Length: 220
Length: 220
DNA sequence: ACAAATTTAGGACGATTGATCAATTCTTAT
DNA sequence: ATAAGAATTGATCAATCGTCCTAAATTTGT
Image 1 (cartoon, rainbow over the protein chains, first blue to last red):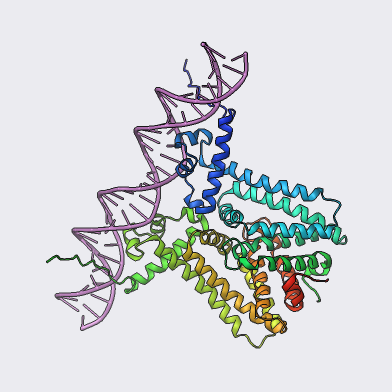
Image 2 (cartoon, rainbow over the protein chains, first blue to last red; image 1 turned 45 degrees about the vertical axis):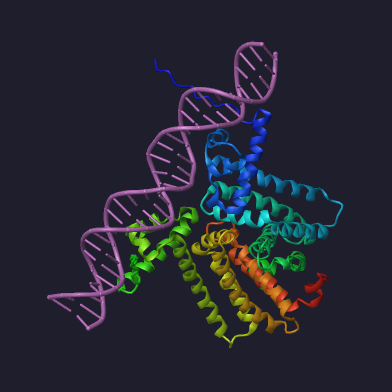
């Protein structure tokens, strides 16, 4: 009778020390990803920044992929919380809430964290399906909220048409990242871009019609 | 008297074979960057794809940074050529030329090369000043052309105001990359996004005024 | 205080990385 | 054809990478 070695897999993060370690690890990994990019993100560097050994790090995250997956969920959950708060502000008008989301997103991309973090994720998502899936989740949630507000502002649009408008608005804002983000050449123009975005997207949301969205024909 | 070893630095790429090698190297490096990202771009993989040894590759590019710098110049020069051709079409109306640029750029970001290549560059530019500089050059040139057309469409705008409009238009289009690019979830909606972009950007270019661009006050 | 489970340290592994060098082969102009 | 320079090979270097494993130390509930 062969005996199989029972590999001992303790439940990590059950002790208080373990929970704090996990927080520290994710924070250190995020910092490195922001400041040195994915190319500079090694397990050893993470462990060193936390002040633990590689062996200990691998106790919490057996593989690097496990760590990155968890890191991603951690970041995304933060954004999802914000979208919830916006969704609950049903007292404000649809127009005000849309303008508020626009302001939040564009101001967010000008922070040091987002400016450096998201381009890394876009690049990673091209070659890592796990990252790609999570990113689509996140942006999908963001579009849901924009979508609901567009529906209030322009009730004549059908689902497909609203999807187009929301997609354009969401994507356009992300595109500002490499230009007005932290340390980027046009960072001082961030507030101006918010103004233009408000005007441009509100106009689009209110005035888009089937003629434009189906065939591209339009009159100004 | 000490004798210094004269290190032999032949002029690479002077023979026909050398010129072809350089082309092959840049092509291989581009392919890898597109298909496997910067993380997968190693000197050995490049050499292997070209069919030469690492030693030979380092003969042409002493360091990896040299190779990447040259690769970047190579890609960018291709875009600059296109912008020149557009600039020369003075027979078409400003409106037509703007719509043409919009179509070109958005169609370009939906190609497999651009969809995967540019997000890598955005990420790299956050941690590599050489890449950052080149990218600013490229986008600067692109905005110059948009800028000239906005000037024709809306002569009342001053330099600062036109800069804002051009920046917003250019950045917004780039933002579509992770969404309607090749293999991306909304790739089938690329043509619809072109339609919206044409409408939205033409409206902005024509109707933007000092009130909007200075303080963000606007009426729809 | 005790026992069980979690947390930690530290060494070792094979693989891969960018880079260097001397020796050899190939191209080209004369 | 020959000589000079360009191109190429192949071995080697130290550094770093992700992962694995064992033994010891620490924390926790009772």
